Image (tube, rainbow, N blue to C red; front, side, top):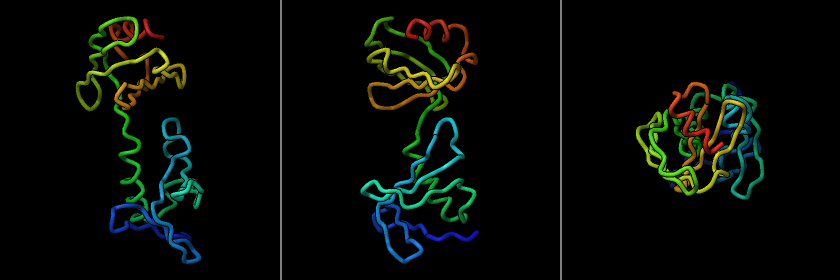
Length: 155
């Protein structure tokens, strides 16, 4: 696959882009257009000052090394554990402490307000904990009855 640019790591571990004209852009950031609803779709490579340098319709358009570098760079930015069960909530008013199970293990999170629960679709929710971590519920109907009952008090 031919591409008009090359990606590499800087000595500081950041991403750098060498464009077709030979210009070097350090501290490049990959940003998915729709990271939750269409993660395999479009992706932009953005300069340190926020300007788009390259648009990619798909990671499949890249050489293996560039694809690997981009996926490494995206992984910490897109960390979003899937919430799979609600065990207990301290209160049905906020702030509320939640004991939950995720695909990464057990977690206690604090829901500051009902506004920290965002509905992306009829079945998909994003829950923001007070520590800044976002948790996704991909299919509300797939949760067990106890979890759905607890969650319904906040929706």
